Image (cartoon, rainbow, N blue to C red; front, side, top):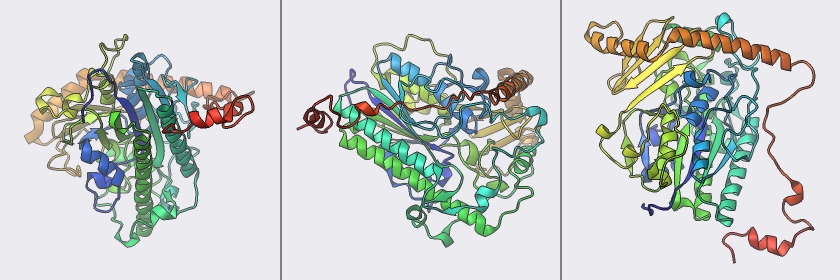
Length: 509
């Protein structure tokens, strides 16, 4: 699949929420059906060690958009503001002549709800204010109003509709319509992010997706409960320590999750079909990924908020012009996508954007073009500074090793190659003293954990004060209101409907 050096590739990012690659057929799960992701992987590059940089919705997306770790941008949690002054890949691509568009979720918090996108086609599914700010000064107190509990496991099952289904249907419809309009108006290059909420809990699926699976064949969690301090905190936080769930409820939740993975995959297929119908497929770089994973009962945990593999790893499949077919075991992460998008290999730009961006990632093009690993420095850095913690939790993944540090907890060191379930903590093992010491020294040199904690606490107090004040008096909402002008839609009396019919048809007669 080749293109000329003067033709920039379009970009379509299709993003899931809370999708673990371990629960995708594309990554080898024996039950879960993901045929459209399979198709993309068969013609592109599948990354087998891709990670988020913060295993929680908003912080992960802030890193994804900015190419920076959350400690650089104070994007610590789901109530943290994503500041308008922080450049994103949407800004960078606009500088290179791209039309930029967002359909669906991005969990922007704050009054800027665009962050470089020229347009948003939908509102967001989650609130844009500071209500979801945790309190590290009361880290042991469970959050009730907006926080996870075990009800979503106990109540898993089938429904005709949910707010999440309605949202994703709208996200897909508007994205498909805009892609066809790009074709009608010959609008290229474009960069679109279509971001879905599934398979995020609640674990509720429509019957046609539920019925794809034999309920009795649904596998149960395999990794036993562990007793490290952060796991204990998370179990308290989601009430898994007191609210027991039955094997039948766990199977229901996993069944619904698998069904919703297939539902998300169907949306991937709809967008790919639209690209093909619009004659845009051959010149579009397609990325399928997610903001983080889901423990789904493994280790006695649900949801995310930790750096174990099921929570921190994400699918990453990239296909399109210039991308060789294959798989890569190199550790990569979401912050690598910004430099990949603006690299000359993708944009065919005569230069780079005028702004000298501060980026924590690196371009994936050496790997996408099948070059040897020596040309790419595979490593991942992660930070978790949100609920169920009181101190920053920091992660480094390099080669086969993952190292996790928190000032309040014992260190963790895992060899992912030989111990993919992360059952054997090598920290403190004399045979790994040198490796552990090198990681510990790197953490101390890279991060000032005490200063990050002070910053987290300070921003939490600021946001809590702002949120309390905004509850009084007239409501000023930051939630995005999509712009629509009915006087300019479909057939109206101030233009010729025959001309409209010609202009709105693709291919044209």
